[in-house]
Image 1 (cartoon, rainbow, N blue to C red):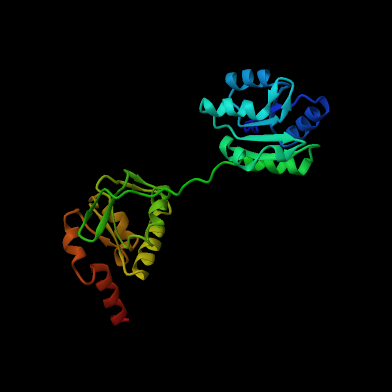
Image 2 (cartoon, helix red, strand yellow):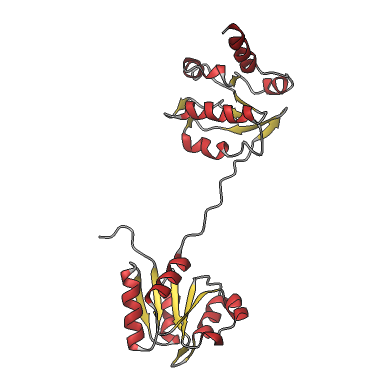
Length: 253
């Protein structure tokens, strides 16, 4: 059984040959196709079933495809629609925009044209990037809460905030575990922030978590604090403890 079925498509077409051609093209694309040959049958279908796409002929025995689309939009249905017509000019650009018609495909149906229109109409919208929200600001630092088990997925959104906010503190007061790969990513974030004149600080580090951070040598690149209140005084210092330690090491070497 296919665990990832294709788009559910309602094909509204009264011409048997055009309906057969359209169905074959859609099924070759992996679509699940339902048929209707008039506006009434199509309306009953979309009222009873969720579809990912509706492909509607323009001229039908009991009306026009755009009339059906208008009724759909009037009740709040936002399903993408492709119109099929031998008279593409009868569906004006303002009408396409008003009815949110994804594409108008001329008849006779051309395989690649319909394939492209379907792919574009059923494509998932791009996901907006996740923008983390700071719990509060202490001194120059924006403080971001971290979960009990800190993973790479938790840090990924923060990784892309470095261009907007250069002083980042992670609140690890409830964190007891670090997933594999977290420490190298923290070092990468710290280096990126330092290059842009910022800092990364791990605040509220518990005694249980501190040895894991110290053993990996993270303290040479990242400031580690046992509490949150010290962030204010740390932000007023011209150089941070880890910056001073790195400077001393460079002098000794």
